[in-house]
View 1 (tube, rainbow, N blue to C red):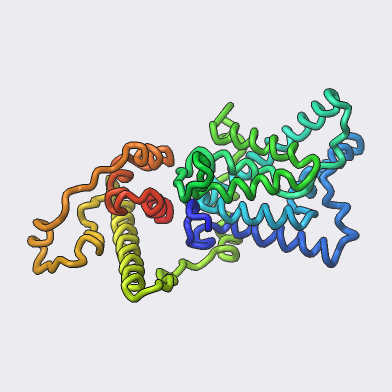
View 2 (view 1 turned 30 degrees about the horizontal axis):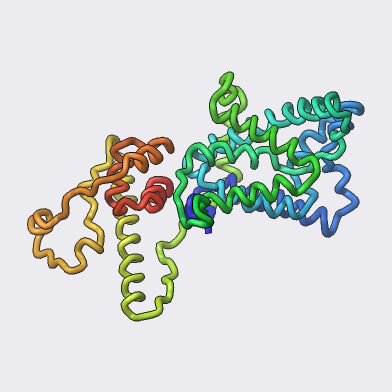
Length: 345
């Protein structure tokens, strides 16, 4: 469904898994069994300002009291888990922590601005939950995930691999009267943290000792096992289509396994990936009989020409030009497959 973020479940994403399980479980518990305790988790900035209930800045910004907000934010966190795999759990948690703190300041400023400009009191009507960091994650999602067109509708309008994520974010954005305040403060905090403005990423970060402690205590609880390489094969209408589907699946699994092996060797030895060691795709050798290694090298097809626009998109995600070029060649110029290669391994 969401091809831009991979399909390996919650593998190597313990922080995302914890954010999915713990706040969602507490939200259901409060809604179904302990409704009388919901008042302790109301995000009331007026009480913070007048009665100095500072604890509401923590309790009111962790658990959603609206189940539809819980559902939408959980789906978005699941799809944004790719950033934890890419950055690492500590850096990902630092981004969430920094945007969570900055957005609290932004909420105060926006609430006061709305009061002085329009005379509207919004301090007691802000939605509860871990919403601002979720909106903050749209900043790296927009900047670093490439846009891959899926289908055309109504002429210039098109559906991409990112369309459903934006629709889900829009649904969350319109779920309440004053949630736009939390959304704007979250986007601004994500922009400040992602652009390293005023060096906030060095100040608002998870300390190394805390990261080690959580890695030792919490990671075994929320870690997920590595997914199997088996995948379901679509049922084609004819035997030829089914054979083609199976061949494409084997081709993909072969390239993924070879890429992972070379990636591990690169991490051990350092330097660029030796892509020449990858086997040619099954599509290129379906009707060719390789008798020995020399003959296979002589019959190898010349390198494919890749689009500079696709290379630029991969380089924007932080990959080197060499890796981007060879990933596109190995995937037959398929930007989506090349992105999954580079992100998931």
